[in-house]
Length: 308
Ligand SMILES: NC(=O)c1ccc[n+]([C@@H]2O[C@H](COP(=O)([O-])OP(=O)(O)OC[C@H]3O[C@@H](n4cnc5c(N)ncnc54)[C@H](OP(=O)(O)O)[C@@H]3O)[C@@H](O)[C@H]2O)c1
Image 1 (cartoon, rainbow, N blue to C red):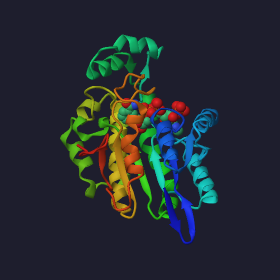
Image 2: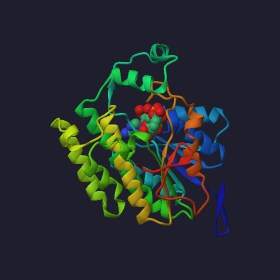
Image 3: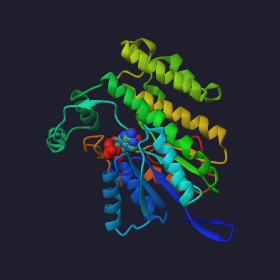
Image 4: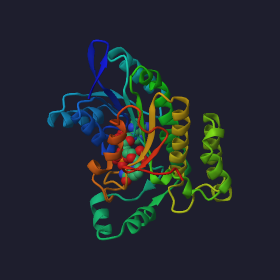
């Protein structure tokens, strides 16, 4: 993976958020294996450094660490300064970091794995739900991380992506962010109609959701209540809409969302169907797609799919 800038042959540079474990770590591994210089970021310095050293033991010396807490905009600015100084540009941004917005009483994942062994996917997800609650504090943190955090990191790094001859943003989304989960037709319509949406309106919707959540009004307004993970679904739907707005505003970049599938990570209490390698496949497809490819789109694993 090399690009030409004048006479210099310059390696491609990627940032992955939440790169210390799960799908993020695997995306780092696969990008680095493809010759990309990877800036693995994590909110915790120790966990990040450990992840870089794990990749080092696999022979991947082209991975470096930088601290990034996506919910702290100042840390995104520090990351941008670092990249500007060291590389002068960024080719690939993978917005992967996210939280589920829930609390769970599942203490030992191994015991839980045994509890759900042999169950169908829906049953396993229902069992996760049975063990969890969705307090306001977690809902607020979920919006701050998954939606506002993705935006803050993107904004800080956009100027550097524009210095690349082929800038790409891959937003790791979820099937749960699809608009089919919204009960209210009005909200669904508003979020589908990208030509009339603005980032300011998305911020307003984020505030409105949290107010409704606090006031016990989520059902009445038509937020996606069925099946739980309410704040998570809203956060990913807002992130998807932001991704589409951004793709329209920056036609020279490729900006897409990817649902990785139900993957064996801590977020799924390790009971997903897919290995992290399988889950990272769509993200890698988009991250390494040649210039002129899809933008403003959604991948369900590796297949193009609608946002509804
Ligand atoms: N697993 C699935 O089945 C599934 C399905 C659909 C979508 N996804 C999406 O796939 C992505 C990766 O999920 P995963 O399953 O790999 O989750 P995971 O194992 O829980 O890992 C989440 C990663 O995000 C990081 N993170 C959380 N908050 C952060 C913050 N404020 N700043 C920086 N990093 C932060 C975590 O860091 P710490 O280690 O410091 O907590 C961790 O590295 C997410 O966007 C998720 O929504 C996953």
